[in-house]
Image (tube, rainbow, N blue to C red; front, side):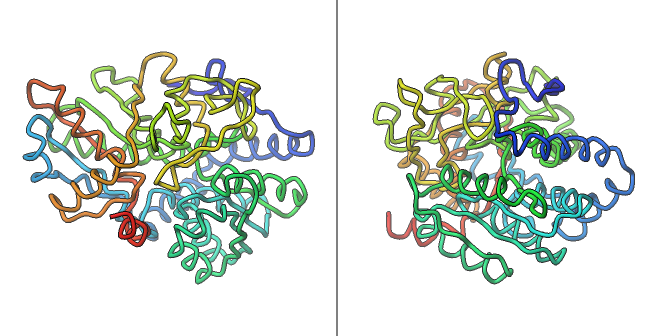
Length: 392
């Protein structure tokens, strides 16, 4: 397995590039996590929350009409959209809230783009009676108004970030500044497989339940492994959640779908793996969208949850060793993907997931005989309906 080394590196990627103020805190978090992940009481409490509160296991659903439309693909959807709060993010926040509780932290902070991680963080904080503040770019606050209101209903304070591109990158910048200032009482709940070690490892481990379930369910249904796994990639937690259990199964091809936005040639996109530039962002070394002088470019995607100029270091590692392929889908194609799943299966996916759905049509055209695929349906599209209505 692609377990990072003791310094949190996946080959050349990952690591810990942070101010001295945070080094002690990250070391403490790493030690606490090492103890807790093998603690039977912790594991039992976490599994109980996933089952009784979040609603696991989620279904592996055969999308019959979508499969008929595509002709050469038999499509199964891993229905993370059916979880409490409507996305896969709750898997991670329930795990991290237990760590925060064990570390005696009374205040939770988080960053969010599409708002799904923010909602999941606010939900977990409410469940355990902890103070919660969520940083969100002003642009995302506007286009994800429903999730902003949901967070507020759950008792969280949503802080609108006015700097930079006013999206996920800037929200994460402000959350880190807050954390540096309030290390004694505050736990920073990162929502993706990004950031300094041990966060990419922690988030991957909590999301890996997606792939473990999907593998067991698919074997029961098909008596074989799938030919393909498909998931959208921003930071990349839902994709790694699906991919991780299949890492050693070389007959199963793994495809991550990045956001091409208005096109790779325009720089108005969020596809760092497509542009192949290595740099450091938010405490971790990975593929990053940057200028020739090393400044971070402003990312663009119609999907707020993919609107990030970096990617998790384990994804960079998967690409480097050829274990996964990373492709891209434009804003326009993603909208068509949303319409396709809505009209064939009666399921409205999140705009993030719509990128993966859109790529199914491209993949199907390359195949000469029937193949099987599991798509991680990472979230439902309620949050995007108003924005899509305006666009259409």
